[in-house]
Image (cartoon, rainbow, N blue to C red; front, side, top):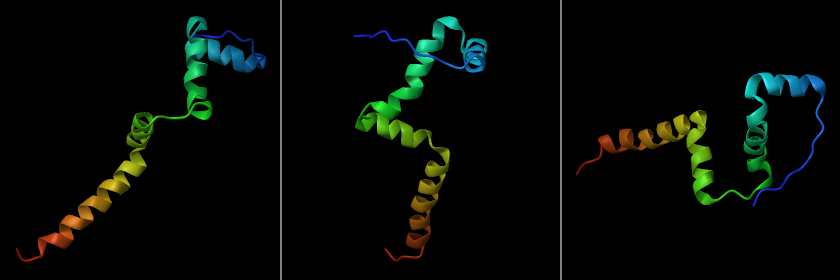
Length: 76
């Protein structure tokens, strides 16, 4: 269910939002920005946010790859 609310913005902020997003898409844009701050994230949403973090993904890949170097010298 959708709820309607009125917000007040500085004129410069509103004009920038209008130029960048367009009048008909402002509500959706603002909702997407606020969603992660006010709604409990599901596990899937959490994984998506983590995967979008390129620095974290790079560090995780380096960590995983460090184990293959250690195992390369192991006897079988």
